[in-house]
Image: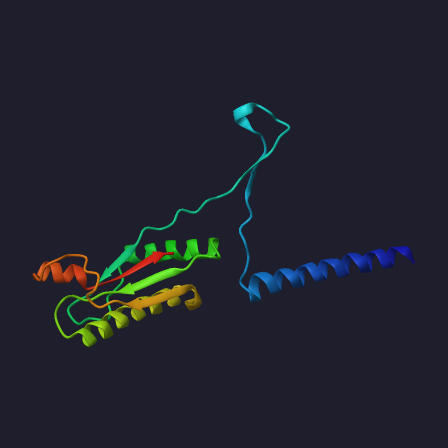
Length: 170
C-alpha cells in the first residue's frame, strides 16, 4: 500500500510543477533566464568554490529610421530587422525595461501637420515592433514634430535627417 501512495504523490508533484511552468512561462510570458554557473574559481585556484556569472545583455544603441517627405512608412532593411531583434531580445531579458519610440518631422509645413506626421511615423515603428513579437504595452510612443531637430537649418539634406523615428530603451 505504501508504494502506490508514494507513486501518486510523486506524480501529483510533477503535475503541479508542470502546470505551474506552463502558466508562468506560456500564459503569463514571464520566463526568466537562468544564470550560468562556473564550476571553479580560476582566479584564486579554489576548485571547491563556485562562482555565478550573470549574462548581462548590453542595451542596444538607438535606432533611427528615416522617412521621405510626408512619408509615414519606410521599408525595413535587413540591418533594421536585425537591430529590432536586438531590442526584442533585450526587452525579453529585462522585464522592467521599456522601448521609447519618438517620431520627428522636418521644418516644412504647419505645426499641426508636423505633429500628426511625426505621430504616424512613431505608430508605424510601433506596428513593426509588435509584428516582430514585442508587446505594445512595453512601448511609449510619441510624436514631437520639429521640436527636436537632428540637424539645424532648412536644406534638403538637413530636412532629410530630421524626418525620422527613433527607437531606444528606457
